[in-house]
Length: 212
Image 1: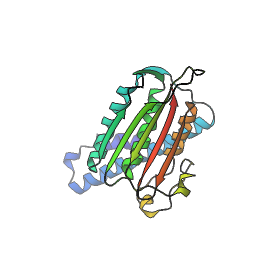
Image 2: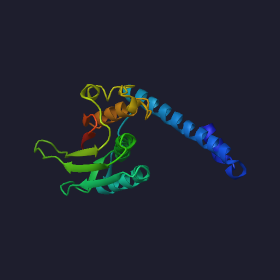
Image 3: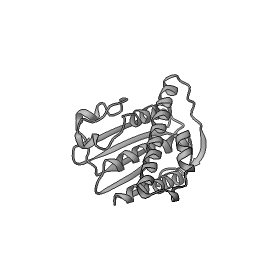
Image 4: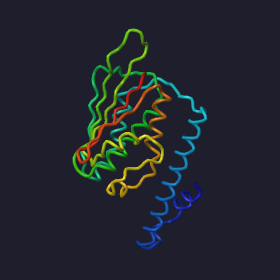
């Protein structure tokens, strides 16, 4: 955190272009290291049973549309089309952990953008059929991309910690194999689940189901 703060205080106008690139690279690396550290701490906190969901009433439509807006700059930089389709059967106001949902969605969008070079990424959200013996509704979120995809062998271990695909094009994108395993634990904490289906060279679908 100290390194990030110092780089933000530097007056970059007084430096040459190459020096500014080095400072920017240092700041980016520090941000990445901080994120990895926080993710590892979150894993430890979840494993110790020390994380309690923060349940509040919020607008699911507003959250999803804002999330799309947050992800658009990264998608636009790669000339990807980003869209959201929210079914009318989802009540606008729901009780749930708004921050955790945002975090789960961001992680999946981040992966989709990272591993998609051309095409599109779409979010589909709908409420699943309601069972009379349950007082909650379950919402399904599908994030569909036209990216590089991966083989069926990796699908069985994609949510395990530190797992990375063996494909060289996947490893070239970087990553530590922490984010998706954290998403799985967050979904289970919220009494939901996350699954994926992918075909090498044909894209990936991540399916998140959560009760509200």
